[in-house]
Amino acid sequence: MRRSARSMRSPLSTTGARVRGAVRAVRRAAGAMVGRADGRRRAADDLAERGNAVVEFLGVALVLLVPVLYLVLTLGRVQAATFAVEGSAREAARAFVTAPSSADGASRAVAAVGIALGDQGFTEVDPAAALSVTCSAQPCLLPGSEVAAHVRVEVPLPLVPAFVRDAVPLAVPVEARYVAAVDEYAARRP
Image (tube, rainbow, N blue to C red; front, side, top):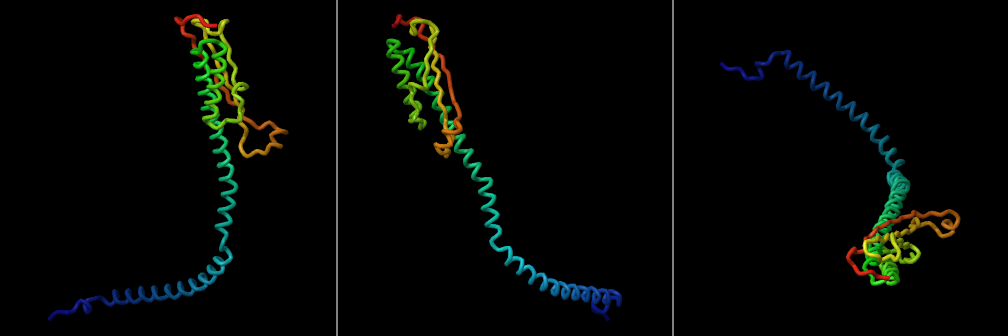
């Protein structure tokens, strides 16, 4: 005769299972009571905390993001000035050394500076005032001599009112120099 698996268990294993089941039931009941009390407390805390995340986010955004945005705007404007000044110095020197005369070279250099500065949005800068040309020999276009073009632009800080700029100079000077050689085998030009 065969016994069933249930009847083959020892009395101790059956008692252990009963004890484990009772412990689980007590834990569940205790957790439910603690959970209810915590649940009510959590709901009240959540109600008091409602909207704080939005306020904290706005505070962090104003404190961190606005200065970073201003820094990006300022650096972008200074970088644009760097491109403009470098390109205008190079083109001014090249325009000067390829001109038929020193007078034509000066007017071509000023025009080249105006175009290069205007391409980067610096239309308020006077190209003639920003450019200075120096020659290594007299006359300037003597074969084998060098012509140096120096361009300087002051970049005002963005979003600073004019009355503040009048009291405190708030500008970043950006300058570039380029030296071009006059063709050694060119005819002598005035």
